[in-house]
Length: 169
Image 1 (cartoon, rainbow, N blue to C red):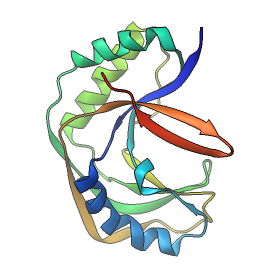
Image 2: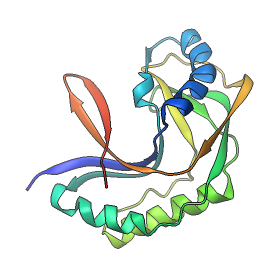
Image 3: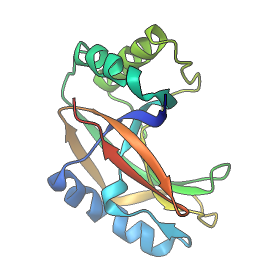
């Protein structure tokens, strides 16, 4: 019996990654640290952590029942999070559709016996790890990204780095 480290996320397609690049690149160039590879950009919706591989299909089936309402998420600032030592692209406001999605996914996790995070949901994309501290800054031009779905993602650690892989339904 093996485990996988997994989470639900908004997983950008190539077009969305191009949109995000326009906001992320200028910030990532100014922040000291390790820039996150564009293929790893995502918005975590519900973190699961280590989960039995043979039970993942249960989560996938339950997640198919979650109603997804398309929405737009406006990333409008860059922040430094000191505990994690990361720079993030953040959204100041959370659309109601996104709040309902996160609540529904947390319900799926509770039904599966997974402990859900209790802190307030703050949509963000990590853009620099091991970042040096900086003051929060408003983006010169906010980026509005439209979302039409979410994914179950596997996090794989190897040789000091992390890669992410969507788990197909």
